[in-house]
Image (cartoon, rainbow, N blue to C red):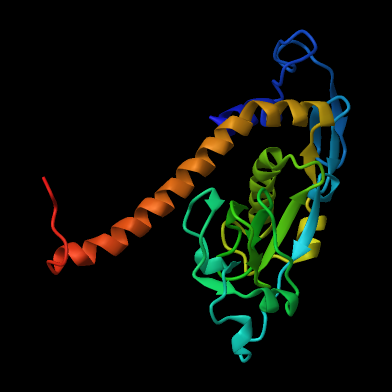
Length: 235
């Protein structure tokens, strides 16, 4: 639902005008943009994603130092952790607070967008619980905490990178790739209006994802006990 609304507002340019009518379909002013080689709504901009987000990098603490990893409770994201969910709740690896202090990654808060840059390239997740990440990823932090718009804009960024990289196959993403990709950036009012509309949808997806993770853990703990007869189903 949120994706459909995003396409309607920011791809077809039929966001609500001052009268609440679809902007482009109602004759809203469109202006030729030389960078994008097409018409975009008046007061919108052609820029890279850095206009609305900061690019952050990751890093891995030394595997040779046990205290960075043993009994760690901080999720540590890598490209192989991507499982198709919009929100990333769990990771295979965890680091300690000491490990976090000795790596190039920050602890990224909820709402930050992670893009896998090597390995499984161009996959997107939204941080659903505080986590660090390795150097094979980049993170995008919304400058105004409007990650809902940023998430879909990042999808457009990946599509743009794929188009420049000979279709769906490209070897890696580097910072200059992100900075040199020009996108159509909406005005601040429309972005804020959109985020207010879809925030409850994203919140529900996040809650459902967390519940699925909790139920999956219960299943994985109980099923072996049931199979070997240590517990039984009480009808």
